[in-house]
Amino acid sequence: MSLLQRTLITTLILILFGVLIFVLIIQPTIADIKAFNDRIQLERFAIENKYTSRRNIKNVAADLKEVTAKLLPLMNTIIIQKGKEVSFISSLEAIAEKNNLTQKIEITPLIQKSGEMAQRQNIAITLSGNYIDTIKYLNDLEQSEFYIIIYGMNIGSAKDKLSKAGSSGTVKTNLQGYVYFSI
Image 1 (cartoon, rainbow, N blue to C red):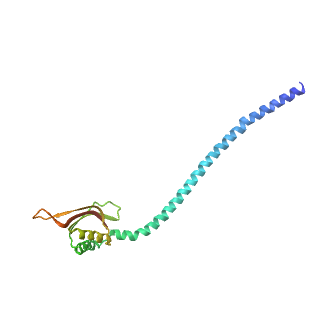
Image 2 (cartoon, rainbow, N blue to C red; image 1 turned 90 degrees about the horizontal axis):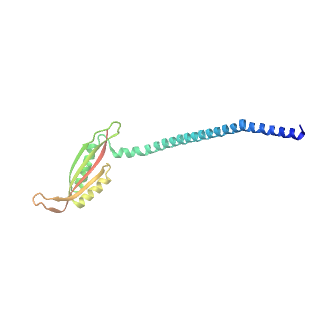
Image 3 (cartoon, rainbow, N blue to C red; image 1 turned 90 degrees about the vertical axis):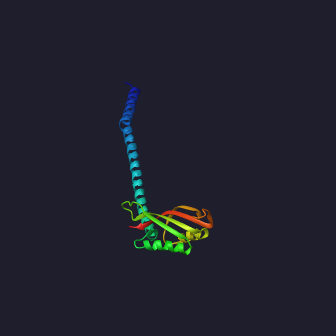
């Protein structure tokens, strides 16, 4: 064999050996490295999400403590405490008397669910009297220390039983709402 043939065969063997090393060793290693990189990225995202959610939970817990501290005084005014039921009714009667209105109050309790901190009770207030006095009553009711959630109001003319005609300026007002009493 000549020197050129030996050089060519040696070169071909080296090229074949290089291709085999690339195909059998380097290519699978690159694929493994990419797969590990993908797993590492997924783990990094999962850890970052866990860290963010823990931080969010801590922020929510801190916010909850802050809101609770602000709500406690408000809850004590929204929920009529035990022993203040009579003063609640008395205040409604005083407001009606102050505004020269006749008033009828009906309170009906709802079924209490377990775990509630207050019992919701429906309240229906029927007023009869002058329209302007009724507006003053509503204003005084709004400024009262007790909270009544009003969801329905009906104002209509009051009818005289004898003449069946509405008297001038006299109205009948029905208020529907609810209040909360402490348990």
